[in-house]
Length: 547
Ligand code: ATP
Ligand code: MG
Image: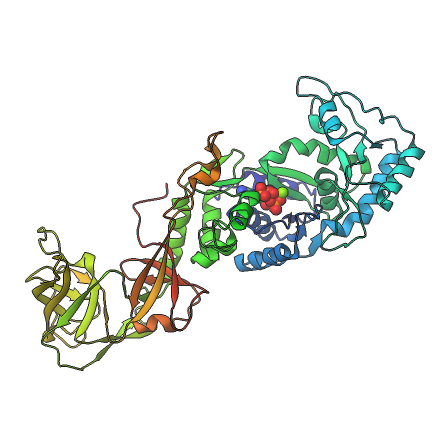
């Protein structure tokens, strides 16, 4: 039997009890940055649960803070969700409900449950008290309903400057849950909003907004991260006090990854300070970054499935994500040969000028599948690592007087090693064995097979080899006296050259490809016809194995 996670258990029991006819979830990003891998987990959960139980998911922008928000972010969020392969029911904005929220605020005032406070921000937070010390009541707390209504309407009309007044709920300044000590409902902000323009100069606070928006949309299961558990009683209080649709909030542990930071504020700082090339720098944990890196939506979904949901904070090994990427790419990606650190090999018994083409599978998992043509000629490059002069016995690649199979083509033998004045090997003179043609020749096996490219046909590539962005495994443990930016990995990008078989540049698979025997790479948008650029997605292999 399938093991349910705690959210599935709740949903199944709610449905069994007939509490709801169908379920409704929402994904509520604040459009103040690009989505990251943590959001992917939330998206997979919200959309995945609705899909599983025949419900729907709204995309609702939590756009209550006009200063930090932007349409650039609104658009990128939609693109990223679509890329992951999910479809929202309605595209909505908390700002769509500003009129309704305002009406409810007046209702709370009328009921004697909200008041306008003239205290400064500092006075208010001082007055809140602490966990072990009750707060003190504001001197403005007992204003009449009429006065509060008048002042609140004046706030809305723009009579006051930012910070001059706020609207607060009137609950209990001694409440053991600090959230109930007269929480702020509205603040004054004379700022243009990306959707409502200059219509408003007062904006509702998160706690006053989220639950009611859920309720308006009849969200049955409002899923958020653990740090919101202290907000839940307040979420419930507004819904109960206003007597509106009973949405419920459930919390799960946020995703934390080793060597990775996922706070939008810090990611924005990296972008603004030019420490990365942009939100879509392939080293960024943003969805546009990992997409540019060559990670697939399928791999991300596999990863979210594997990590599951928990009620306890967890630090997930980045290698698990890379493992998922390899799993997916290994099954689907096309193969090409690319030499990175070359040694020239001259085939001395090859007829000068002759070129022979080999039909090679694009993906060995599909032997009857598509092929590519690979040209072979009398001068090729092989990788330096595949040759060794004083080779140990177990070295089965090319060595002096040794033989090796060139992948997809003949067996060659190394007869002469040519070095420059520094003793560095610059050329190998070899002979090929014409009887070892892979289709028409006799079968003869040698222990090693290496990749190669024909120099007359090869294409030069810029390779951007990426590594983790930070050097500290648990980025929540940055010491107090240090800055997270001190832990940026100086070697997170190393640019090299590669020499590729020509078919690589005609690949139209739309996903990363495998450079045979080396790694997965994907063409970058910076490519030009003269200079194709490839990003390293991940290494071909790793000793890592998921539990
Ligand atoms: P950040 O701290 O990076 O700014 P946020 O929580 O403020 O993130 P929102 O745009 O408000 O970002 O998040 C939208 C949704 O995604 C929320 O429901 C939030 O709980 C969820 N989410 C954000 N980060 C993570 C994470 N690391 N793991 C799981 N869910 C996350
Ligand atoms: Mg947020």
